[in-house]
Image: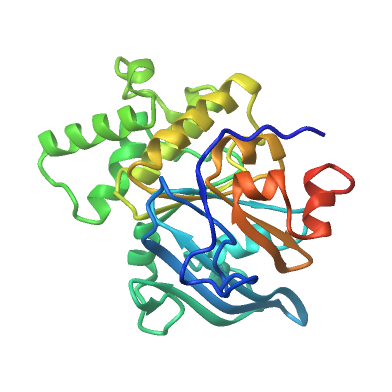
Length: 287
C-alpha cells in the first residue's frame, strides 16, 4: 500500500521535546508552516464503560487551525476520545472518566463547566448526515438564535448565507432555503450539517468519519472543504481511510487498544513511522 503525502516542510525536534523522545502528548516533529498555538491539551485521560476500560492514559496536544486525524482499527477508542472533547460521553450511562482535557486553561470535565456552552465551542459532525427536520434555512439559523448570537432577521439572513458559503453549499441551495434539509443529497446534507456546526463560530470542529457514508465525489468535496475550513477552525477527524488521512491531515494520532501508540506530523508518520504497530496499520498489514 503506497500512501502519498503532500510535501510539507518538517522541522527537527523543538525545545518542548527532549532529545530522542517527544514531550508527553507532543508530535515528534512539527509543521513549520502551520499555526502552533495549543487548542486542546489532554493529559492522563482514562475512560471506562462500566468495568471495561476504553481509553488508557491518553496524552495529546492538539494545535489550532490544523487538521488532526485519528486513525486505528475499529474499537480502538478513536470515537470515544473524540466525544471526550465536548463531553458527549456524558450522555452514555455507566461512563467514568478521569484525567485532564483542557481548553484555555480550564478542564472541560470540571463540575461547573457549562456543557451547552462547551458544545457551542466544540461542534460535532457525525458519521451519517443528521439534518434537523426543518428547512435548510432553519437548520443553520436554529443554534445561533438559541445562543442569542443573532436576533434581527437581517443578521440571521447574513449568518445563514455566510455559513452556507463557508460550507460550499450556498450556490446549490440559495433558491430553495425553505425546503426541508432532508430533501438534499447525502453529500449536501453533510455539508449542511457542517454549515450548522460552523454557524455558531466554534473554536473546534469534531468530525467522526464524516465521509464514510458518502460517494467519492462528495467525499472529495468534504475533504476540500476541510482544507479551507482549517484556516478558521481547528478540526479533529476520525477516519479509517489512510489515503484520506494522508490528504487532509497536518497531524495524525494512531490509536490501538485504547492507547495512543504514535502521534506525529502526518508526512513524517506515513513516510517513516516510529513504531512497528503504526507501520503495520498504515501499510495495511492489519486493521
